[in-house]
Image 1 (spheres, helix red, strand yellow):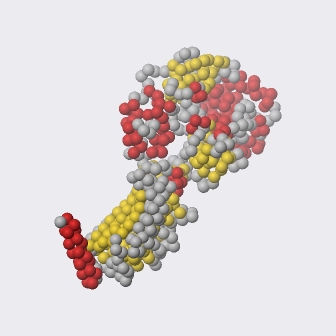
Image 2 (tube, rainbow, N blue to C red):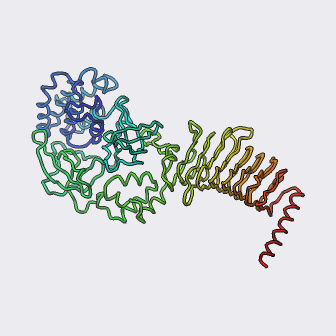
Image 3 (spheres, one colour):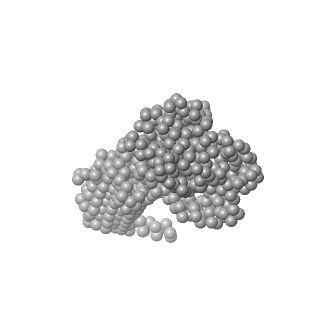
Length: 582
């Protein structure tokens, strides 16, 4: 609530209560909305005399359901009971409050006619905007519900409320602790290793809105056992059934116990009949739980975003069942979807999920796409791929003065495609573990002078360079003992050395080495592999010896002595092959 979690109606204390109040702003009957406004106001924000007037005022609101004049007078009375501190807190200026109160007074005194209650609805909405949500614009749009225990697992996206800052923070559960608390990594990089389950919330979807009932409309006429369509807290209209009926907290009001079809019993809830969240069931109406599989899969295939698919799977049990991994149709949807990065909040333009956070937490095989023009400038100059993902960069996406660290790469391996990387003091790419492919990437020095080694392949890792370019570096690649590197159709321009190895396996095929370059290969005697059909403008080995297990042939542009030696080695290899065949 705007004035604090403890409402004058005695409800809440938990941050979820404040969000739930603002969740249905703009819907329901006018009396229902007025009572919610009064419940959201803390006792310290109203004059002391209001405590004795409160119950009588609520009964008068229910009795005035069909009169816009009476409702305007009752709302004006509520505003008149606010303290001066509350008025200055809820409105930016006293003038806004005075104008609002003046319009309500004109309606209540009959100076202004309002036959269809249009003006009254506008004024009620203005009071709701001030009194129900928190003051921050982003928090005003946040809708949350407590995280079910069954979904409290590693990788769950959560919201955590910090009362000292009076705001929510997005995060991800990274570990489930033995003492039944959770470790949460927040988007800003902070980590809390002991968050209790009661502090974990889910952000709700924003699909549905409550109905706006007419003046004096009590809501649909439903009895126990009737089918209905209800607006769930996840903001989705779902097929439901009325399990029980009881009198509401106010005289003349009714509440219905709603059981959602296809949902567990823990989601059952009492819903006021005039809340705008209920409507009569129509057999021909399509709801979330009644969509045919083929129609649902066709709609979901249009999302083309893996994050949207995960959010859709949280809507209801039937959707979650249809999107469960391991099913052919669900797997096809996720395999064809991309996670477009960075994820930007459409409401305020704030980055909800950055590239660094996505790469650190993305599961193996996730397809990530960097939006065109994205410039990555990691604060610590480190960008880490924790698992084998497919990262594709659109035109203009670049990593500036940073290092891309690649881990994982099991199975089919990871892929980085189309990314431009600039570096100087540190390597541009370091492959630590697994098998990775760099395709169509460009690596260059961020300054006029040469940068350090561009690509390093650690022991036990494997890297394939396809159609990549490395410019202005001391060496294009460093190969450690036990590592593998295959470069195909790459360009090494203005590099003092093409590849330096301390062992391992190297394959250099159809690459182009531009001048100035001292030597193409500086290889440890333990290095194996071959250099085939490359176009060079310098010596292949220079003063370095060719390793016994390394072959060379069909290379163009070598000095005359090396070209003759290569031709001789090729002839000897052909003779040996013919003898072996014979």
